[in-house]
Amino acid sequence: MSGKSEGTGKMPERAVGKAADQVTGKAAGQVTGKAADQVTGKAADQVTERTVGQITEQTAWMARKPDKLSRLENMTSLMRGNLLRNLTIFCAAVLAVAAFLCDSPAEILEGMGKILTSRSVLITDYFVVGGMGAAFLNASLVLMLGVLLVLAEKIPFSGPTMAALFMNAGYGLWGKNPMTVIPIVLGIKIYCRIHHIRMSKHIYTALYGTCLAPFVTEIYFMLHLPVIVRFLAAVLLGLLIGYLLPPLSMHAASMHMGYNLFNVGFSAGILAFVAVCIMNSLGITSETVLLWQEGRPIGIVAGLYLLFAAVFLIGFITGGCKWSGLKKIFSRPGRAVTDFVLMDGASPTMMNMGLVGSICTTYILLIGGDFSGPVVGAILMAFGFSAFGAHVKNYLPVLAGVYLFTFVSQYEPTAPGIQLAAIFGVGLAPIAGQFGIIAGVIAGILHSAITMCTARFYGGLNLYNNGFSAGWVAIFMIPTLESFIKNYKGRKKNDQKKNNQKKSE
Image 1 (tube, helix red, strand yellow):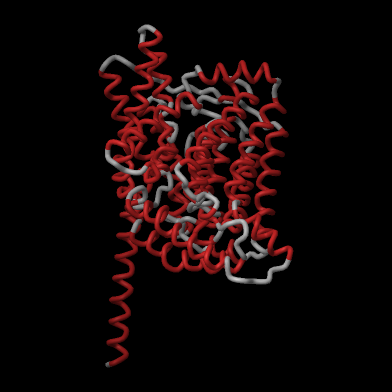
Image 2: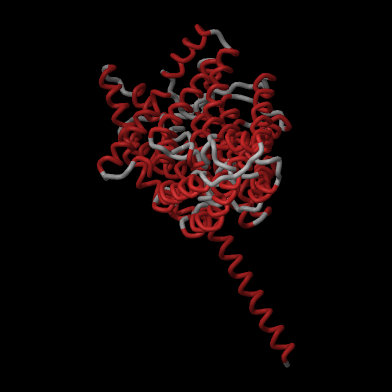
């Protein structure tokens, strides 16, 4: 089904166009308008199961209609069929190849052992822990685990899927590894089995929920008990976290009303805060760390630019060398759930992904930042979320706000937390898209201030610290902005009435 959701390989270009228009007209409007408060609930489920199913049936029926296409159009249609799935698998392969270009197999094996046994709390740079080779291989493995889960549950490679997968790929460089993410995913699987819910309904919670992976290793290292007991305790805690996340995530979405793209990061932050308070009461404490590789390796910088340029060009070519789809993406506010793949097509979405990834890379270069594991991982995350709400137009104001914050605060643009806040600002892009540039700049400033304080709340055990911070920014700003706009429109309407009355007199 993953291939069908984007169109089959033999599907004519006209079928894709008509189906995409139907998504934009009917389904996207329903999702964006009514279901913003139920991001992980019923609306998202309807998009995944019903809407995509209808599109697949309609486009498949239209594909059987006789149509004369040129050889170039047939090739373009074939490439578009499994475009995003193939892109994801290709990126996993690139990460694996990069691993062996950086280090020898023996060094990678040794580094993987260190990564799998590290604490992994914020901020643990796997470039420092196990070396670049092991870090890239770990990111590739984490990404492929997500891909296999998506394929097993027959989830389409839509915008939310791309965002979740590349979020995991990015954190494979600084906090997630196969040993720590599997128990949490299994915990969500158990929740679905007990409540008689299909796993596909909570697939994104499963992928995002691995942000609490450090709890698994932390319990293992902090308990002074026999090895087997510590191992079982760590696994059971991972299962419990996975079991608790689905209901918490559904309720958390209504708090920020879809203006924080990192919904599970916010709900996971709440869960982590409660868990750490309980741990502290039992005499178990966790502290943040700072393992951070400095510098700007030319190989990593060149590799990122080449990847983003290739993705942009593939999207441009498969989209018929047109800019109209990208312009449509730029016109959208980006509030969750805004799936660029369903609404505008895979090709324009890839163009947007390439642009946002390049902007993030360029920003780090311009400020003299570091291409450490966390920064490279954050750029991959932004690359993925450019399929799900973030685009150049609504992200730049937030990025500008983060940079301006450094002029009025004690922090430099190159401070590790500020570098990450700048890239993770994509999570608040919908605020700029909905309320304008000034609101986006303010969101970036507030996000920077909050994110520098929140990590200590849960001892660095929630990897999505920026998602937690972005949730508080949205909760604080949205009611204020909506109240101001409502009051402004009310005054404007009253002024118009008075003017009309004067004219009639």
